Image (cartoon, rainbow, N blue to C red; front, side, top):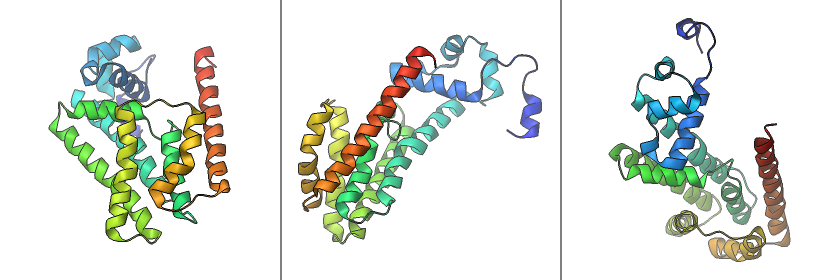
Length: 226
């Protein structure tokens, strides 16, 4: 925050920050859809006056724009970064992308679904969804190209990989971790046309176990207020 912005903040006890407003707006978006992201209900949840909202946001639309930016900076960035990460083989490259599906701190399916629902009511958000899907697919396609696949094969494999996972979220496939790991080698074989090694599967199993442990610890801390 710049010195000029600090001078504009209200004197006395400031109860909430801009991050608090963003967080409660995100919670409302996930729980109630975009209709729940309104200034007065958010202020009531934060136990502050409605006027305090305007210390941080120019308008309601400004808040919505920042929610959309948060979604791009988390969900889309995670997929693009993992797809661009150096990998010795295409199988390891795919596993890098799979990290997004395994760790909701990297990619939140609930947030992605909420934004896609929001897009049904907003042309601008629909355009943002289209741009994000193109960016994610391009990154995965480029990953295949980097590992020697021809242009059409890379394009189709990227589509199959990405659309399969988004489809799983849409129809709410819910598998135990053991089942997911049991299918991992077959998924890798189908997405790459290469045989994964035992080390490949073990590498991802280790990532998944650590991710689950972190998420469980975070949930426990939240429940206990630690």
